[in-house]
Amino acid sequence: MQQSQDPERRSRAWRPLAFAVFVVVALAVPVVPPVVSVVTGRPVPGVTLVHPIAYLLLAPICGVLDALTALSVSQHIAFLVLILSLFVVWRLFRLRRTRRRKGFLLAGLVEVGVLALFLVTLVGVYAVGVLVPRPMARLHVDDPNVVVIDFHSHTLSSHDGRKSFTAERNRAWHRGGGFDVAYITDHDSIRAALEAETRNPRRAGDGTVLLAGREVVYRDIHVTTIGTFDPRTRTSTSEPCGPWPVVVGTIPANLSHLPVAECPDHGGGLSAIELLDGAPKGLEEGDRQRARILAIADSLDLAVVAASDNHGWGSTAVGWSLMTIPGWRDMTPGQLNDAIVGTIRTQGRHAVEVVALRRPPETRTGLWATVGPLLLPQSFVSRLSRAERMAWLAWIALALWLSARQSRRRRETAP
Image 1: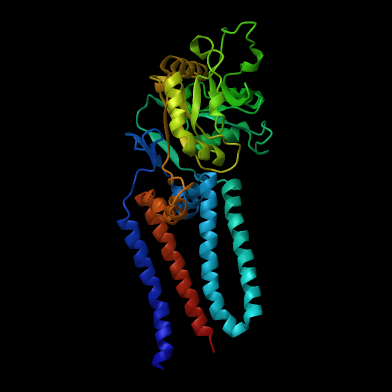
Image 2: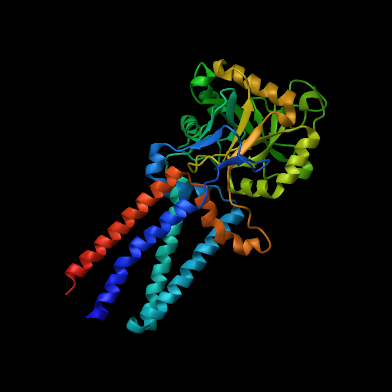
């Protein structure tokens, strides 16, 4: 009789013990600011991340999907290898137990089915992160003279844009992420951007402003431009130093082959270069080439900017460009555009401050490539605010209570 009660007691004891462990972790792991300067890696005074109530209610879902969105290509691979390895090890231990009851062949078939279900679930999680809208964490800046900008985004007018991602959905996405201004830089098209400008608020501070730009291949590299001017129409033999747009170099790019200015005000070349691009490949390149990009920006006096490169996939803003423009809220959208252009031209390297979500270190080479993924949970928990941690604990408590209730029902109905 005593032997039959011991497993039951143990099954009842593990849940409160597990919850206690989660509480200790939530309280013990220090909270670190989730947004940092991309240049220094340190928090920026007066810059915080705000989570709306809907986000907190879905904190486990939103937090995990945000963390996945902020991974580079190498980090995605490392994460998937880690998850699959842990799953395989767990199921191998299970196989040792189940094959005694079911036989090796039947137990093996069961494990193959479980693995297939796990892979489908994993693909489903990524699909939800890419396709399903969800509440967004929003950047908040205390200084009213700072304008938050995205210099590179797309709509359905781009060949690789999501077909439902209209200009107004682009605006809603940027509003959710805390952007004051976003440039629509569709591939070789300004149609959606011009339509979006007709729906801008009259006063820039009254809503999220969308401004026109375009993405083109100029001198063999991808660039975005501020405004409707196409740099490819300017030839060196006609008017090489005529009116010239602000041209932003995108990443990934061949940094050894950047267009160099031939005229004053960066005419013929770049005025700015992306330090952070929100696409997985862009994050990879930014991590790998950050020191070189900064050296180029310093030597050529180029502004460095953040770009979402959003094509309508996902609901996470990874980086933001901050510019100090006194009185911008009372400007018209056109005046604000001129102020952004003028500030980049006159202040160059010091025109923009780039901030981003704090991300786990790269796992590309060396010992860190093996050990780094194991520290992803700690890195993730440390970036959670106190409110997010409380929301996580509430969901964990609910899951454990439902598990206990289900176990009790099975015991009551057992013969």
